[in-house]
Length: 177
Image (tube, rainbow, N blue to C red; front, side, top):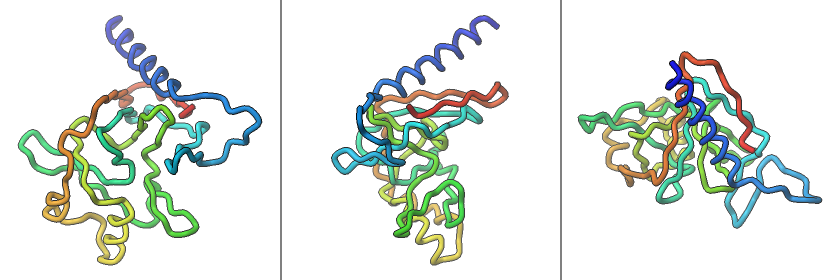
């Protein structure tokens, strides 16, 4: 029992450390909902994320922030195909109709906080915008596996990966800051 508590506390401390590693205070500057630095949008540090059912923090080899990912089973089959469509709470649509994830947040430290990731995810070159546009135009919620499979561009995308399992545990809420 003590080992479980120690492991959980270690995971929480690692998450707090990595989330806080990229934070710095800007004096005399108002914080906008989205911050810009060299054309990269950073998420508002006051956004609250929950440890339930899990929380993932990672870095990838390349910038896959606006691309869909899918799971690959040990047998090499695609699994957990995303069902992003208009009206879903998992996507954001701005005033210009641009679609972005509402489950993935970019930190100034270079880490991504993600509610829908797992270590066995692979990334495609399909943007979330393209995915939702296709689903809307075709009246579907998910692309055919064959279309997704041919668009996989990275089967080993993570350079660092941290997972906090929150299922069947007390919920912990963190701000991105």
